[in-house]
Length: 250
Image (tube, rainbow, N blue to C red; front, side, top):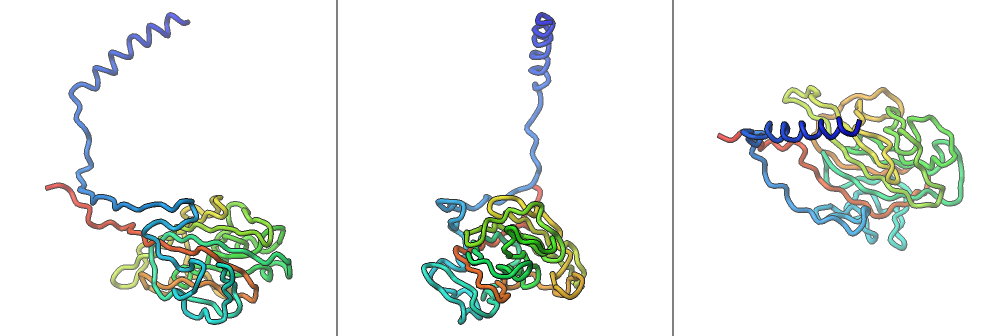
């Protein structure tokens, strides 16, 4: 058996070497722009050099409606009123850290409830889902009323948790018809809970999803749901996913 394997090896190596002779490098014919340089943060949670800081620990000046929120020791806590970013976003990467109250009060949707609404319409649910039963498409890191998380990666109440989100905004033609739906990928505490999940439209509680707005960009919101959820280290990166300057070499 050993001799046959050696013999086979001796036959194959020259044959493979011979087949490489005369071949040329394959090229796509597309002229790509050079990728820009982005300096990563010191840790996965730290903002990279091109990030837009939405909350860095001192103020909520990047948001509208935040007058009632409390800021203490680098932490912003919901205290009445949903807040909205002053800037609009489409395709983007979002990082945020949140913490539900350490003292557990309520159950189901009444426990540590908030939410990040991408483009004001598509909610990634924020909820204390640690040993807390509720409908599956309404628990932490679900796409609200549309897609339960792949797994429940929640940490105990009072513990800081992270969301890292990749969002692809919906695209519409000149007549307002949907060309491509929105998609979202979510890592909850570093665990994949949504992977390129199609969003069916707005994530309303009281009606089926539909693409009512045809905007290419819109603000993000953090929801007030009568629970004192806390946030820190929120940043966003705008993504250029439709790199339309690709063209074949002449």
